[in-house]
Image (cartoon, rainbow, N blue to C red; front, top):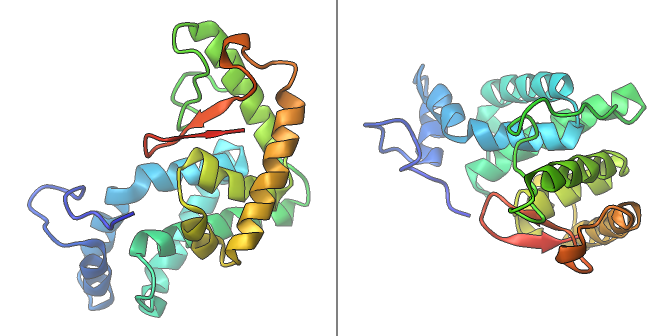
Length: 213
């Protein structure tokens, strides 16, 4: 996963590391450009991790404020996007742990509320929507650490290595959490699987790939 220069606003050719360095050096616009470049995916991760739009918004705001203030601590040993996602995930997980309870599951009011979609059968829109809601419910019922790993790997399409860097844990831990989370999802979703999807339900990631649950 490469830091994107082309994804930024027009007429700004700086890559992510250059923008972060410029922010640390005092450029008043650099951090905003960096956030605008990656805000959609950061929001999707926050929303999927918390399962609640209000918690996601608060967690993302806390994370971006922390990143703004602590940008000088970025060591350059990872991609800027990895660092930013790490800050967002940690802020969201901290909020969930402080609440000491799993969040309730809000039903989406429209197709875009839940970020990246899940379509088991693109020709059956009602069935796909209902299945996506059931998958979201099952996802939010997972233990927090398992949910974070599944969101990063199976929903957002990060590699195990990238997810490990974001979560600051060994790759083996990410694999284990994903395996346990997928097993729980499969058990919960057994009664609502789309018959045409066979034995698996698949998340379509933002990267264009898919992952069996």
